[in-house]
Image (cartoon, rainbow, N blue to C red; front, side, top):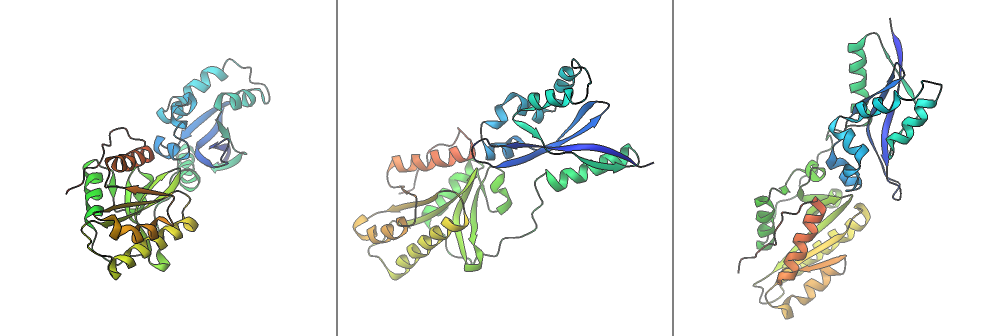
Length: 289
């Protein structure tokens, strides 16, 4: 016989940014909640790096939240609304969304329906839209040095979907319809674009180098519209009298210009990437001469 089971989605809403993230499902049974978590510390850290450290959220992640709630709620008389009121206080900053119903004939079907709801409303969606193919071009020496540095520290990927898995992603589509891809992208709540311009060894500013600087500037300008994070220009040059016009062109569209010629610039890049990935083990990059 088919029965109705009341459930509520569980969500966390950032108190100031207004962003929210569904983190699980709560099913009422015999006056007590059953908690079905379906999130990760990494997903929560993208919303706010402080969230996974909160005791209630940590208990949700390690699976102990239900037992903790039951221990507290069983001390409360099961009067109309009394346990629900106490539960709302115990869950903060997790909130229970308006109730809905699951219809199932037995426990197996109920578990299947719960899994379907978690897949639909809570778990990270499966990737279905593939990034458009970026025309191949020869990467600069500076880009390859940064790529090797990131790979050595297990922080590099060419898969777009890894942007939410603690990786710096190469060739990230900013506006693929216009053929614009960021050299690198990294996510920390917001999605940041990085363009790399290597002018070391340039004796004069050729049309090719000017064009490369212009395309990178256009890409950063497009990132202003299509991405919500910072736009970083990473540059290096041997002769700044030669390189200055190209650097000026790309920096016009950047929020920050990082000069990799100086050790302080290389450290700033390392600090930015480490901060975005919530890592403390990322040393400064050393360039080849």
